Image 1 (cartoon, rainbow, N blue to C red):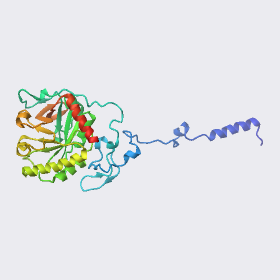
Image 2: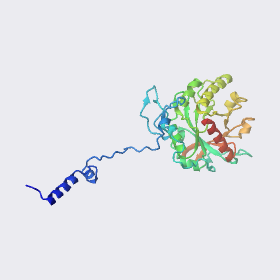
Image 3: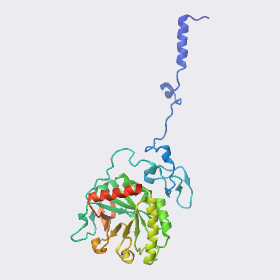
Image 4: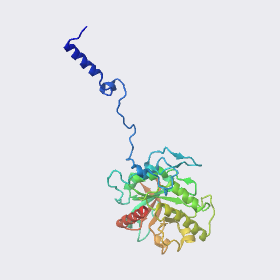
Length: 341
């Protein structure tokens, strides 16, 4: 049967309608796949440009990869005895230091509101005479509310990372990340073990502590520990040699001269007159450092091991920086600049 002109026109229109894209709303309602493509996973931070993603030969891999400064887990790992070693730098270390462009708030100095379970009368010069206070922590402080701790006066924090050549503090990764997120200037410290080679201990620290130019200088904690399984007390010459090997290796890697933390008895036995060009962090919980370590210049003073603060349920070590607020900012900036050069 022959079609009229009007009928043919109508049929042609219907045919064109049937050829419309299946990617339209009707196809989605019907459950058909859309031709549009999109990423199913949104990265938590901007990805670095392709050329930057090439691993720096000078960068030592971290022994842990899943939480390095909040980065995502690695997909490429090299299996070793003990902890896995990533084949590339942590993704977070490749990202811009401040990708959002929002000014950091770490420069603000909070007045200290700490209390002390065992308060001491330090005489004329007390910790309250210093403008910049901070803390040092380890696993023994448990889960810390870092934003709250910062508002209580923790303007900087040294975080236990490693000791010996095979122990990583189980809270280090969490504390390292959360302190940074709270805007606290952070650094890592290593408890030195006298029954292990210094170079092995340096390698272990480097494997576990990210190289961040904005971090505080690394710390070597040297003291006699009666609770340690290692009862060895090397000669002064051996102590100084081991410390030098460890500190040289860290300085080459992090670009900052390490800070030496010590206690009165160890200092008297080994460090009087030594390492004059190194920054010192001195423990003195009964008297001012000038009385306990006469003639020694210092950067940090640990004045209490029985501090109390909101944000942490356990007692905490309290410290001060030897200088003004301006002096603190200058000291931090100078070390960051050195680490980047």
